[in-house]
Length: 182
Image (cartoon, rainbow, N blue to C red; front, side):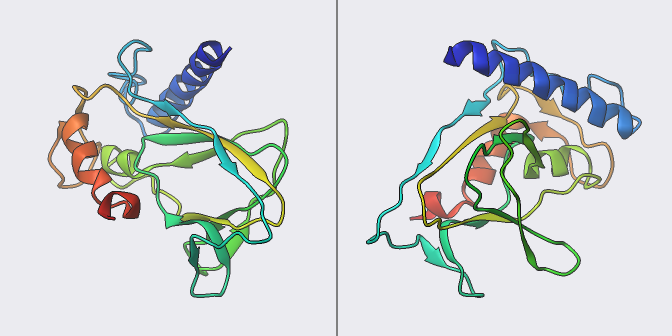
């Protein structure tokens, strides 16, 4: 079941990436190079946030919100998130800097641009800063982090950043996440 689900999400991801490339006037395969099912390094994760009266937040946000996951921008190309029943995901508005709660929907996905896509698109697509509020009930989320083969040569669509291999990008990118700094 898990392998079939991974393959379905992979097909959805490739369709989204072809659409994004076309929307940016790039060849349809610009973001799907290195995304062959057998070569991509995408990750399907099950996040379980248990509830306990004694649970301590991972962090306390400056606005006082107790967090189950600190604010960050995903490092992936895109993230496909399934948040079926219980909310908690919050996205920061680029304009107002306010945090907006993303309501859960059993029949839909949340699509998030990652920092890799920002670089690959030449800063034409930007990742959203987001966090997870500590919930008063148990919560599950299932993210699919879409990532190409480490050997994928990423040529930015615009800007002055040089092209590079995805493997080199992800090695540097991972160093920015707090869990890798501890």
